[in-house]
Amino acid sequence: MKHIVCYSGGHSSALAAIEVARKHGTADLVLLNHDINPRVEDGDIKRFKSEVAAHIGVPITYANMRGWEELDQFDVSVKEQAFKIGAGQVICTSRLKTEPFHAWLKANATPDDCVIYYGFDATEQDRITRRVGVMASGGWRTAYPLATWPRTILSTHAIGIQPPLSYGVFKHANCMGCIKGGLQHWYAVFCTRPDVWAKAKWAEAEIDHTIHKEQSLLELEPLFKRMRCEGIEPDDRTPQQTWWARVKKRIAQPGFEFDGAAKPCECTF
Image (cartoon, rainbow, N blue to C red; front, side, top):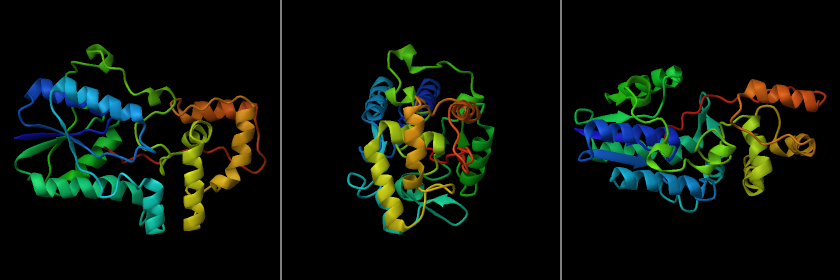
C-alpha cells in the first residue's frame, strides 16, 4: 500500500507527512510535490519542504508541469487568455497542479494500491468534504491526519525546523500573487512584491480581463498607495472581516466597497 502525501511545502502538509510517517513508516511513503517557478514560490518554502523531507528520510517526488522553470501562474493564464474558465475554475491551478497530479497518479498508482493524504485540519470540513467527493469520483481513497487522527505534532518547531518565513505575512504557502486571493492578499503582494504586482498587471493587460471583479490592479493602485501611506500593514493572516474593519477606520474610498473576500482555495498542493 502506497501512502501518498500531497506535500505542498506548507506547514500543514508537512505535519500531515510527519503523522503519516510516524503511523505507517517510510517504506511506502511518497511526498508528492509540484515545484513552482521560483519567482512566485518563496525560496524559504523550498528550504522548508526540503528540510522536512530530510527529517522524515524520504526524498520529495516531483510531479511538475512542463516548463515550470520558466512559466508562472501569469504566463500560464496569458497563454490560455483567461484567468478562470467554466464555473470559476482557475487556469493556473489546473495547469500547474491538477493536471500533473492526475498524470502522475495514472502512471504510478491505482485506486486499489494507495491512500492519498491531505493536510486539512478539523476547522476545514468544507474543504475535506469537497476533496472527498472529487477524489472518490475517480475511486481514490483519501485521509486527513490533522482532522481525524490523534495528533503527535503541532508544529515543526518540535523537530527543530522553522516554518516558512512567508507565514509572517501570508496565510498559506501557495503562489505569491494567488489568482484566487482576495484584496487583502493582493494588498500584501502590492506592498511586499512589486515585481509580482507588475507581472500581474501585465497579465491583466494581455488578457484584457481583471483578476478581481471589483477593479483592475491598475485601478486599485491609488487606493493601495493611500493605504500604505496611512500605515496599514500588509497582513494576509488576520481574518478578513477584522482586517477590513481596521482599514475602514483609517481610510474611506468613495464608491468602493471594501470586500476582500476570496473564494476557498483548492490549491491542495
